[in-house]
Image (cartoon, rainbow, N blue to C red):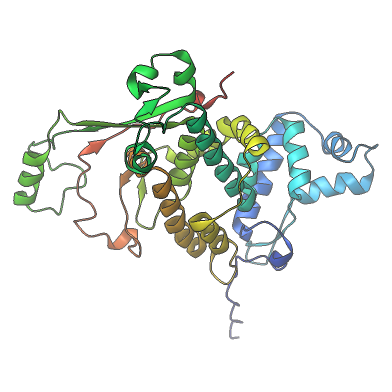
Length: 354
């Protein structure tokens, strides 16, 4: 008996146009499992959570709704077929009751519009701090910010200003060090297919004494780091642990994002708006949307401060990718050993200053 051909699987939810979530079915399934795990770890019953959300004695219907949020309906092949997500207002309440970061939860649930609005607000708050701290009083300081970051604060050279606790709490430096390419009997990681003469040229060009640092307001730095760590370009290869770093970063910056949304909420414009359009275009696969959105997000970060964006990419990526290049087709030029080194900042430094 001939087998019945299986219809192609689509990761796009059947009712996606009516949902503010841009997540595909697999991502929604991961979110449902995560939500159930977080609730159970905190010892909160479905009835308790339902009572907190709907402010009434939990009935069977409301408890069943919580169960629905944690349940994945699968097809005969075991693939996600339907997942009910809590609405953004409901998810906010759930996060409050369970002590979770709403920013991290929204990213997990695919509510990317809300995440992008928070990032835009963080950048806007950063511009506000720059004006408050008179960073652009010198001629050309505003124009040079995109390339150099902060060079001047309240009448002082930035490095002198950062010695005060006030500015140290509000600003952060992204530091880059250029190192010599190691020459040993073994081939350096990433240099397997690079000719010896190219390796020799790279070694001679690398001056270990060269260092750079780009200073930006912490809200702006947080937004750029989320963009770079959360939206890798096609062909980018993360350093180990960067995926979890992004989760912890979103958790750490949630209070700062809340403050930014209260005082500096900004509309999505330019490249970040194009990224939003790409993420919600369900005609494309989830991976395809992310690849396109990453290009727009990187352009947005570059337009804010190209220097700090370069630092963030060095800190988070083992190798840089290029638009349209897949990981399995990377050329030797793309896999050149990284001569500039940087480390990601500890997420704890993004606490809101008093």
